[in-house]
Length: 326
Image (cartoon, rainbow, N blue to C red; front, side, top):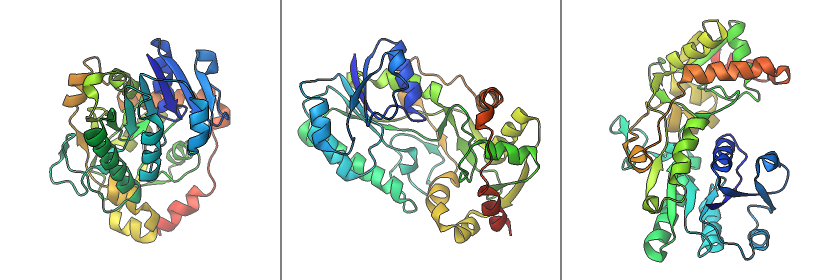
């Protein structure tokens, strides 16, 4: 398989890139050339600004692909550029949407790919919905071979899933737990949340690449493990050997203090999300999440222990949380 990733070195896409390369995919990564970290694994780089149509056309001149994935398409204008550039140049185009696009508030707790798309709280999600609508129209009217993927919160390395993830460094959350400082959880801490390790996500994603049966379909790729937010923080605490000091604050009140959290909270994390993964497992039988959060957090802690340079606390996070608690 010959594939092109626009991006391909982010939190989720790096794991997919590495799995694709180890599986024998001829992988091209298109970016500005600032990150060449996968070159030694066999990735081939095309240098271009992903938002500059002419640069992309020059970079891919004369090339055809079995699969193109745009990891950094966020607006309908960017979606339109993808269609114009890659129509006729790929057998499959995968658009990365977001599970936050699903109906808010939910009418039924269990989310399938047919759950309606509507998010009045978050412009990011509305833009993703608009992109989905555009690509679906292009598939229906022009035969553009699109597959839509909706990740939920996916983590890797030292990434720590917390309700208010405003710190610039992930060690900040670990250090707060170790120091017994308050960790704010929205609501009563009992809403359910799903986290997925990127290594698990990559298996499902690779199974969709080059899969002609997946064209025209949306998929979410998530873990089957849904934990309460209190349980998530306690799992992190177990990894570091210290129970977290949890403080509950109503989601609406948090948003009153920090309006910029309206989308990430009311439009996402404040909702209980339990995903039905029947569809991705039917199309990719090998897909199965084998890394529960407790193991993912153990891996994160091991990374911090190996890498002292990562153990840095963001000094702006404490006053940010202190103001919220006051």
